[in-house]
Amino acid sequence: MALQGPRSRAVALSQRGLSSHTARLRSDSVGAVEDAASKPIWQQPAIGGYPDPALIGLSGLERMRAFRDGRVPFPPILYLTEIPLTTVSAGTAGFKMPASPWFANATGIIPGGMAAVLADAPLGTALDSDLPPGIAYTTAEMSLTFLRPVRPDPEATVSASGQLLHRTRTVGVTEAFLIDDATDRLVVFASSRLAIFPPVNPIPEPPKELPVLDQAWPGDSPDHPLRRPVRGEVLPQEEFEQRSGLEMLHEWIAGELPPPPITELTGVRLAGAGEGEAEMVLPCSPWLSTALRTVQGGFTAMLAEATLASAAFSTIEPGTAIAPLDLKVNFLRPVHPDGRELTARAKIVHRGRSLAISNCRVENAEGKPVALATGSSMYLPGRAANLTGIEQLGAASPDPEDESGA
Image 1 (spheres, helix red, strand yellow):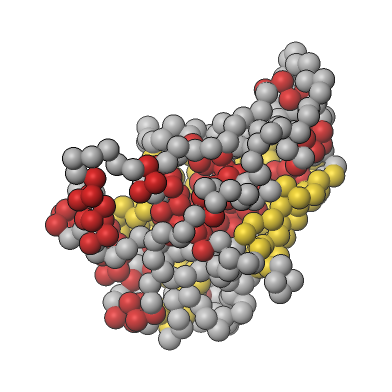
Image 2 (cartoon, one colour; image 1 turned 135 degrees about the vertical axis):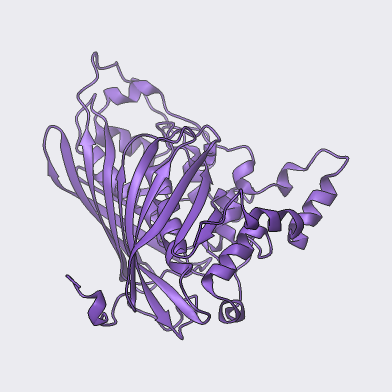
């Protein structure tokens, strides 16, 4: 089936079938300057700052300790996600993420892509904390295995601990464990391969003093993104029982179903869908920017994971749930927070009775590939879309046609 996207039936529907919520927002803005607070968060001005580039003159551990202690400006991504660095030593790092309802997708769970955003932090910092002055790195590959679903809870957190396994002059290998703090159970295992750059020449003289800055800590203000009233909707189970996955995808594209909170927060949205394939976009807003003024690789992975899941979702019958099992992303080039869109296209390459495997290509606004991804999902007939009652992903035995070599 041909992909239905911006130039097809789906957008024609969206032009005449806008949700009442969207139509109301448009009506309210006619003849007046739109109140910035009425815009989705990703369209609002980002808060945060960037450190002095001369900090590269410090060792990685010194830089990370300065970041942990608030002695350098917090970048926008920290205010968007509230994922602070909690512990750091040479070769190890710990972070913590709130299980915010803002991270929920339409099924009511926190998607695997947000786990990638969290995992990216300790996977990189575990290496950075072991580097000498003048040395930088970039993430080349990230792999995640999803073990248990993570559900939104304003009072809950997920911790991520990373450690360095191997480092040479040009390559680092790290791993991370994501733990549900409420149950103390492992929810995601992640690993990464990172490329280490040659030292800068000359190595700049770092600042002699780094006092604690007078800046708001992420989450301390009711104006910070995750502290605002949640926008977007989680759909009731009845919606998933009445329509096929492809029908629902077309309705999201057309604006006939409301966007989930994660869309209101980041701007990630569906742009096209066909049988076994999907297209999604992510605006590279300044909110996604790290201290290095680039879009965090975790958000590129988030876009890829959402598109891979949508490709699998397009093939399900009413009353069937989809559970992501794993994600592997190869990063090809940096992404900059210039406001333009990343576009991801995914297609199922193998489909059995209980398992779907898909490939995804992520491109920048120039059409150049920035990442390639692969992911697998499990079909769960008769299960709730929010995976209620599922405590361990991938626990079911595969059908014979899904076994290795089949």
